Length: 437
Ligand code: GAL
Image (cartoon, rainbow, N blue to C red; front, side):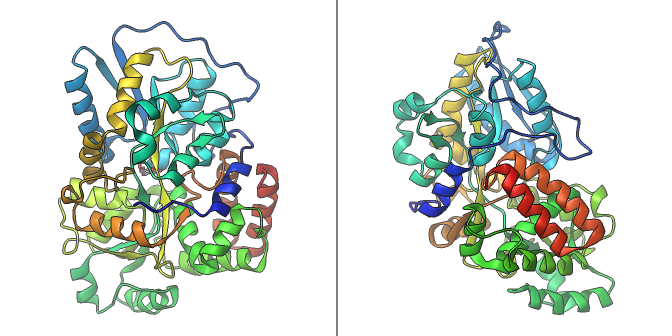
């Protein structure tokens, strides 16, 4: 955990991506206009009393970890009425649209969930909607406890813009050990291993790979692309040094197309939890999902890591840790600023972090967390984070700004229908140009 998160090349590249505010999100979401860089930040709204409104997409199964933080907050701030405003929808597909509408309408929440990296910097900081938290980081001693690379991802030369609450891993493949044994297959190390096992599984009437609604296809794509091109090329892609329509870029889409052939036909109607359920129930053998799936299987499904569920790096990505970090910021014009600052203090604290993360299925963003509080899966994730090559997630806001991310969702929809790797690679190249990559 002491290691610097990303290589300097990646960081330099990310800093170059300070362009493009969010565009209208995926088709199914409520339309939301993009924040305009030139639009003035709202005046502080009148305080609504002694409230604190926290905005996130951690509803339902993702709620308990957030509740643990709120518990601590309430103990420390007994007079404050906490409004836990959530908009359901994995990876924030719906929440991010609602947030944009509210921010543009001059109705910011007191604090909102945002991914470290370009989602924060390329959208909200670029639009001048956030307060600089550097004084808070100094006051709390956070410059010393958060990894330098992570602070760079949430910062610009003008300030530090959010408080990170975790580190999630994106490139994980999940399974149930007893089921694999029953079917006589092993967790694959490469996609070729997977294809061999998958043909056998299909013959037994088992779905080889469970997939859910559209954003989970983007999620799967980043792990497949990392396997197809390797970590150096992945970083080069976001640094603008490797074209998306290069041979490597096309190869990623080709491999993705092959993988898709082994997924369930009803994917678009399922939530990520329902796709995970397919694995738990033995209807599917594997699922590639971020380690919030470990949180779901542990906290909601009461399964034991190692026996109830197993994991391996997504095929072909062993030795790489594709990471993302959830964080919360302080929007300009927050109606209850003092209550929000107190909230951020809980988020960044060791106590808060070690209460939240074991339930969430993530490791602490702090370098001094108490690993005894974390289960077997999380201890292994912490060990991998300390030794693996760390690269940034596209699907969860690290690598690219909203212009690219939202456009990518449309490219994905097109690919799902056409399966045309060349066309998808070309569309990504055009998108990269538009997004300033
Ligand atoms: C990610 C987020 C995770 C988890 C996941 C599924 O974008 O970073 O914390 O909430 O979506 O909803």
